[in-house]
Length: 99
Image 1 (cartoon, rainbow, N blue to C red):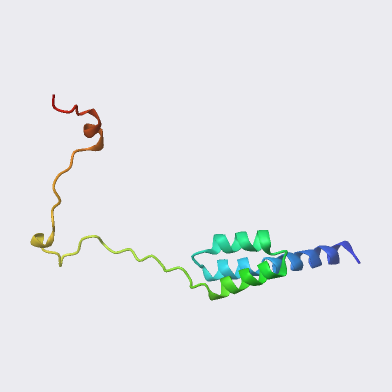
Image 2 (cartoon, rainbow, N blue to C red):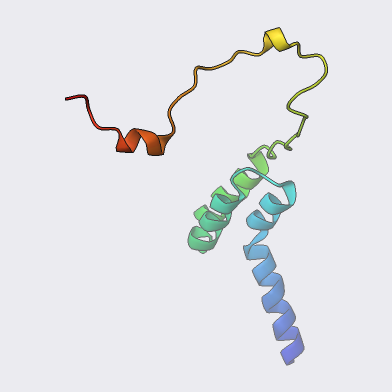
């Protein structure tokens, strides 16, 4: 077998071995790092590879983050609840107890 055919066969084997990780990354799942770790560490056992594959397929894709403006025109000033002012953490460290 030629060296190119050997290289091609090794690359195909590697892609097949990491197939659960590829599926997880493609689907943008929330636990893609954990799926990669399970695939990498336990994929050499058939059971670990199957577990990682099932996890990658069943896992729901991560939610897309939606950024909204924090304040819109519809908020009235009376709707805003003001919290009592707190001391800064550095001020609390240097206060001595009353004597």
